[in-house]
Length: 126
Image (tube, rainbow, N blue to C red):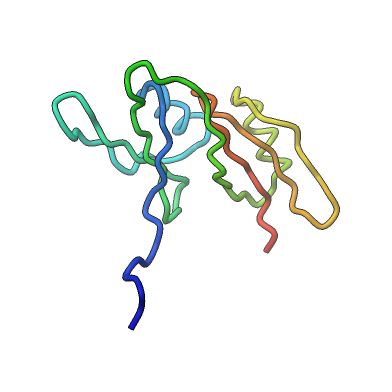
């Protein structure tokens, strides 16, 4: 008998100061699609975005009042060509780090969202 019935990761939460500002960044700069945007109370909403076709989404969760700061999310996105994506994100105004290329490791770079949450973009090695 299995120890769990967990079968997948549905979404990962990322805290943002303003959901509308974050939504604009994820849709217009990263090119993600909006999967869900629904009220969860009189003043709160649940917002999910994801790369087109991805199984796992990112929930843009509203920060508590007065909470600020940036987070190294540890989340890695994959792309077919890191060099091309790096240039495209720079062109769209994203805060990207240096394109890193090491022997035996797929090319990669960082990208920060409008709140300074850090993500990593890694070339698909398959």
